Structures are given as structure tokens and as C-alpha cells.
Image 1 (cartoon, helix red, strand yellow):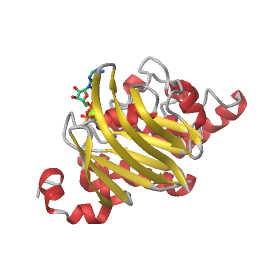
Image 2 (image 1 turned 90 degrees about the horizontal axis):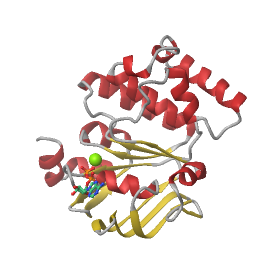
Image 3 (image 1 turned 120 degrees about the vertical axis):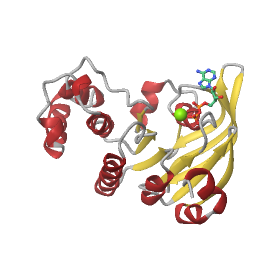
Image 4 (image 1 turned 60 degrees about the vertical axis):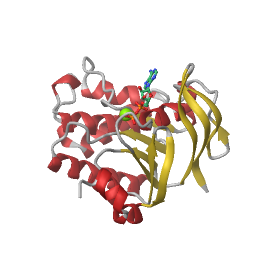
Length: 235
Ligand SMILES: Nc1ncnc2c1ncn2[C@@H]1O[C@H](COP(=O)(O)OP(=O)(O)O)[C@@H](O)[C@H]1O
Ligand SMILES: [Mg+2]
């Protein structure tokens, strides 16, 4: 069964239409990568799913129609969104950031889950009481991802998680995402500029150009596609 069915006829910001005819599905537990140049509309796809854009069409999580719901209800339906730039709260401690992610769960359950995540990622645990602003880029991205998992989502939206990270940190981060996805069965929609690592952990991919899907296929096919290689793999 599809976790997420996206059938966007048009979407954008008020009178500015950015996306046209963007359609794809992500199966339960599956992973789809969205590639595309700067300004192509990748972030707008994720923001439309999260209820942050004006849109016509349908976006469903399982049977539930999400278009028209306010963002907190989209989150409540089972979507966790790690925005571009991570969206952690710098003034809050690491632990408080995690608890924000678990705000829809009973307090005791959220506290226990936060403890589990800090055990899972000792670098977060060691900094539990410190402001998130003091973390390195890689640690902040880990915190943003752990915070997203705090809501036990069915579907995780990730907007350029590798942005600003060194290559080794990026490789580690994607290995962690791969592991977490396997353990939890959470489906992922991944927007990335780093096509090589992203295609490496996904089954399917689409390329967006000027707000439309121009290429779609299996991730390994796209890795071998000459146009994709030239544009996104730098070879
Ligand atoms: N808040 C906004 N209001 C109006 N236009 C926007 C807004 N945010 C982005 N856009 C426009 O939408 C287009 C796609 O942006 P975006 O989805 O951020 O692209 P990408 O994530 O692929 O770099 C760009 O032309 C951008 O200028
Ligand atoms: Mg973007």
C-alpha cells in the first residue's frame, strides 16, 4: 500500500504557481529521492505536503486527504518534516528539542522516547542539557532527525539533510537514515543535492525542473542515466 500519494495539479505561494502536475507515490516503508537544480521547486513539494503552500489536487497519507489541513494536523496524521536548514531551536536544549518533537504524545512516553534517542546517539546524550546552537552541523542534523522520529511518523520528509556537511559526515548521516528507516519501517521522501548518497539509499527517484517532473525511475536507473549523471553526479 502507498504511504503517500501525491497528485498536485498546481501549487505555490498565493498567485505564484511553482509546481504543475507533480505526481508520485511512496510505498509504506519505501524511499523516494527528489532531485533538481536550485529553485526547481523541491522545497515547495515538501511544503505543499506539510500544508504550508496553496495547492490544488490531492495529497494522501494512506486514505487520509492532507490537502487543506493545517500543518499541525498534517503532522498529527503521521508526517514529520525536517526542513531545509534543519529547524532545530538553538535556544532550547538538546533534550527540549527532542521533547518538542514528541509534543503530541503523552508526556511520560515522550520523556522515555527522548531518553532512548539520547542513548542511541551518545553525542546528543552528552549534550542533553546544552543549547542546540552549540552543536556541530552534523550533530544538529542528527538532532533534527531524532526530533522528527520522536513523533513516530509513518512518513519522514527530509529537505537537503546534507547541506553544509562535510562528505564523511554526510556518508555517516545517510547510513544512519538507512538504518533508522529499516528499524522503524518509516517511509522517506528525500530532497537532496547530493544525488550520489541519496540515490544510494532510495528505491525510486524523480527529477524536478521548473516545477515539473521531467525524469522518473528506479534510483539505480537514474544513477546510470547520462543526463542525470551530468547534471547531478558531476561526471
Ligand atoms: N515564499 C515564497 N514566495 C514566493 N515564491 C517562492 C517562495 N519560496 C520559494 N519561491 C519560489 O518558488 C520556486 C521554487 O523554490 P523552492 O521550492 O525553494 O526550490 P528548491 O527547493 O528546488 O531550490 C523558486 O522560483 C522560488 O523563488
Ligand atoms: Mg530547497
